[in-house]
Image (cartoon, rainbow over all chains, first blue to last red; front, top):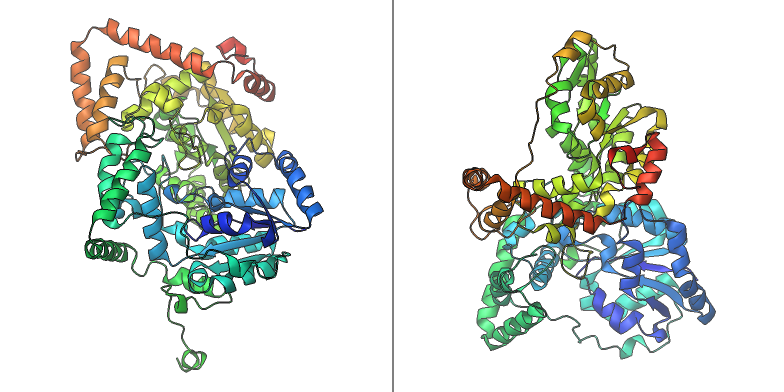
Length: 322
Length: 310
């Protein structure tokens, strides 16, 4: 049974897939806790990581999966790096994965960059962030080489896909767009099952709760409120000394913001969200055209059809005429 | 052809070497631009490093220096990683340097950990960090996987030394002990020049300002005061919060702290410093004993003699 490594990206439906699909044996997969995978594959310092020992920590799970006829799957979006730190370790983690699971297949789920950037920003604010969307997407901090923060390059998916293909072989790397999951989740999961050769039960996929949202996000109004309150109430590694932080402070703040969000008229939330999307558009307009064109060469779905910004393809005849 | 590469660590007398030795033409040395080193070796994202571009940029400069009888020196302590983010990229940078300069020679200096960790904390506050010593060394929060912060592992020297040995070969890596620089700076420099295969110009060596100190460590009061002001006024990658960031805020705050510092008896700073030293020693405990023993073995130097815990 060849393991499947679902490496992310963040905000591409990974939580839903982990909780609603991979976690059920009828899916044909045997899921290991993402935290276990992170502790073994992500957290060790560059010089502490030992591939052989790491493989041993997974050996029981691998043999149990084999015994049950299930595909062992690691699904952890952190394996493509963390957006808040610009995926600084994404390459190293890919190397580690190859060293530990050289026989694996890889699944990379991607999402149109403006949408994923918004979702990542919301996630950052939910955690403890305090930057505006512009500051988050294009940090202009002094001493930028001291600590890594978000970088637009992180969402140049083509580079990550290319690297994984170079490590595992192009036939062992499947890229699927989140948009396909949203449009037709059944088709998405069938494609995944077919690729991983998972013994999924015949009617299991059609019974899944596709309308269920695992993580509720705030509107842009809620995000804006929480951003301003985080420095006061939330203590985090990046905010070690908030003024009034207390145990559970972030949870209470999230509830408070969610309540405000619910009380707001839909029209106000929609207007704020639209404004936020325009701000993102201003920051990243055109940035990913070339990257998406490169990605298009490596995937079997039409990126433009799914809303990705992509360099217009010049028809071969026109190129010849030039 | 390939340069001498001085990778740090931070707080091991790197600034002195950069200001007085690496730029010293009469010693046969010429320093490569630090910003360019960062541009080609530190800043590129994980999938973006291009060793050919780096080589293409530095090759003509190195050739030109050589034609003038000078050995090029690539010196930046950032090449050993940054302590404020736990040296998260120190291993990767070594690969990058090796890819671009496989025949390079490496100079790396180490320093007893409780001293270097405290110096790193002070540096963190000087650039804008708002955290207390404990918050800096043991950041709060349950999940360590988001953004890299200080990591004690960064100063377990044997790992980086072994890594450089494996890439460049032991004979091409010189590991220096900072305490030896304090003890006998002339001999320290002589060892570097020998390693670089440069005939020592005794006259120039005599003239080096060994007594001059660079980046003098800030006092206890200065640090205590500055970190609190950083919280409000200094925005930096180690402090993204600062609700009232000022243009040129860091210099202003540094100056203000220096003024206030003079008004407070030196004894107060001594008490704060000694309490911080004690705290650092407590937090470090025995964690470097094994690493120091391995390092001693690797570099053929009894580190216990210089106060390293073994």
